[in-house]
Each structure stands twice: as C-alpha cells, then as structure tokens.
Image 1 (cartoon, rainbow, N blue to C red):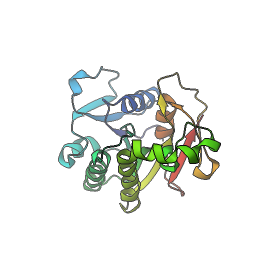
Image 2: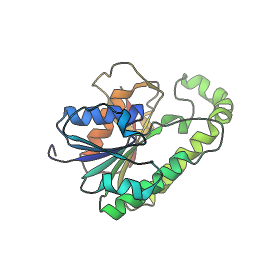
Image 3: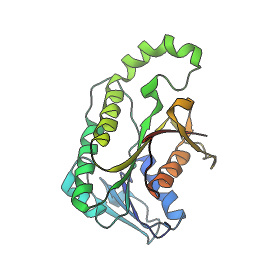
Length: 213
C-alpha cells in the first residue's frame, strides 16, 4: 500500500511529528492537522498541513478527505484530574471520518490501563492503588477512547504502549497480544513506526494490541 495516503491528527504533538516523519520516509503522502501549522518545519512536498483543533469535527474534515487511513498522533497523557481531552478528540475524529468516508483508524493508548507498566510484576499489585490515584483522570479518558472506537463502526486498531521516551528507536518493535504482558518504556519512534504499519493494512481482531521493543 505504498501509494496510500494517511492523515495524522496532531502533527504538532511529539508523537504526531514522529508519525509524520515515519510515513514520509516510506514515501507515503501525509495530510496532517496542527493547532499552529506555521510552527511546523517543511519536511516534504508530500506533506500538507491543515489548521485544526483535535476536538473540532468540521476543522478535521478537510484534512481527512481523500485519505486512506487516519492516525491519531496524540500522545497518551496520564494525570489525576478528570479530563475529556482524548474523549472529545476521539468523538470529533470518528464523526469527521464518517463524513469523509474514511474507515481505517489507528490510535495510541497506554499499557498502564492494566496497571503500572514500568515496575516489576511482583510490585505492581502493591503500587496499583497509588498509581490509580495519580493517573485516574488520564486512564479513564483512555478507557473511553477504546470504548468509543469499539462502537464507532470504523476499522480501528489501538496500540497500547508503556512510557514513551525520546531515545532512538530500535526499529525492532513488536506488536503483541495484551496477554503477552508487554511492559516498560518505548521509544516514541518505535510507537510511531507501529502506528504507521497498522494504518497501512486492514485491521484484524483483536483490536487492542501492545507494542514492545
């Protein structure tokens, strides 16, 4: 599917920028959204950027029109305070995709939905209550994302990852079932590569997978 084009929601997010760069390196044309597109570097003639807020449907539609797939390039954010950031953006994206007639979507979520992902298994049950208090708001928002997509009618895949770091990618990332217990940190580039991989192929069950390196 090298002739396919993708839309990246949130090219001004560090993850979104990594997704854009990964797609362009593969020769995949990219339509992207950014709140402040003038601040983005001109990476390629194969990149077009539309000014759009992630949670505003009518602003997203022009960027999604004509694409073969959409990648949510918004980094999972964990925090204690209640938030609808991910939920609102997911609703707007799903509605914009239906309006544009585009079905394939990939998005990032967090392995922390199953408990702290960067501590040994033996300590996870002890730290779970503290972890829940510190990250409850962000985790609830990500749970709503996955539930919304499950009922969206779209062809979707969610990739859960551990804490993202800015180290160089390994280029050996693996996509595994959640039951395999992938844990730990993950280079942002590796998650971006996995998101593009999934965007360029039809989704297959299970829809929620883990990324590890």
